[in-house]
Length: 236
Image 1: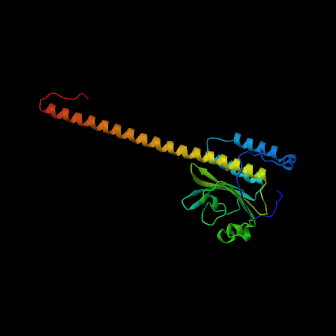
Image 2: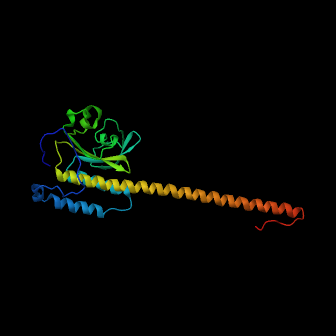
Image 3: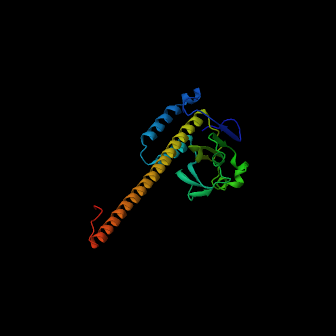
């Protein structure tokens, strides 16, 4: 991936079309058709497991952008969980604190724009994020993923060289982040449905238990009246 003009930070919003902003140079290079083929193949491999689908999307982001590694972080409380990983270095942590980490600023601020941080060793992240020096990172490209109105995660691709995404890269990243958003929304909907089904089952059980108790009480009344030589008031 060839670097573009020097710039420490770049925040861009693009329509989710991989090929809407492809320059003539990119089109001639043949990268756009190849990316389309790989993107389509990824979607066709999707199954019912949303987490596995997110892992495939994360891997595709790293592969197509040529990153050193890629991670999809899910935010839970004040921590990030590396839900999906591609080519992460040995010993890469499953869970880290969110504050001060590369790729978390957009989650905390509710930003859906593509976030690019170049020259990482010269930024504050060199102090707040130990991964910058530990993994010799130079550039981070990330985008927050929303579920409803809340930012729930961030798709991050890390580079060990200077890199500024072009229009095609940005549009591709937007599609991948949007696909992850769909999987997160589906997961949230499935969790709500599961909770609803559990509540309905509990209510049904309470009703059944109550009906059983009523029948038991009626039998006890019948037995008492029978002992007194009286007519049974209930049919059970």
